Length: 203
Image 1 (tube, rainbow, N blue to C red):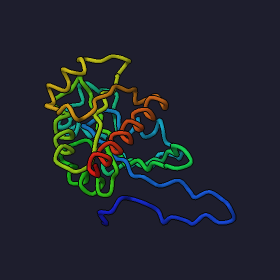
Image 2 (image 1 turned 30 degrees about the vertical axis):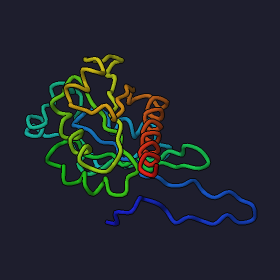
Image 3 (image 1 turned 180 degrees about the vertical axis):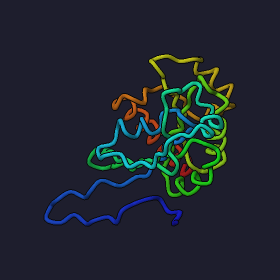
Image 4 (image 1 turned 120 degrees about the vertical axis):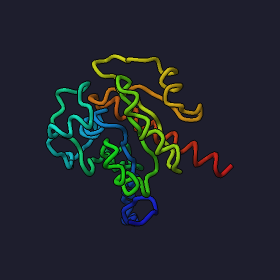
């Protein structure tokens, strides 16, 4: 796959018509069951494209589904959605699998991404290390988003930063993966983070 930022061929404006929005690739990452598929589905303006499979008994043991007992399927390749931000930007959302055994997919899905939203479930901090560590070792700017399950946070934001050893330069926000406006705000945080990184690199 090409490592250049994901983009469709730009069309020249004709007859005074506007140019189409710039397509931008954003990755939605995180551990198993943190709300990635829910977030993409909540905000996508097209039907969610997903590669979900039933969770077997053996997989349930490996993935430790105790905190998410109602979860009966899991993403094994990717989730895909799209959201138009405004006349200038259209986001293409690529959700990654959460389990470590599907980690080889992360590299392919991250190629060409402008930024990433790394979702965290504070009830299962141990399951969040892998995704945060992965993006800390890439050039992709990212925002850590703590999913408010049932509207609650198990830990304070600064405690989460300390537990996951997240540097002060990385924003940590809270959001509700079920709520469209909340997910949209989280994605805008990723865009702002990416812009800030780009601005800093050219100054």
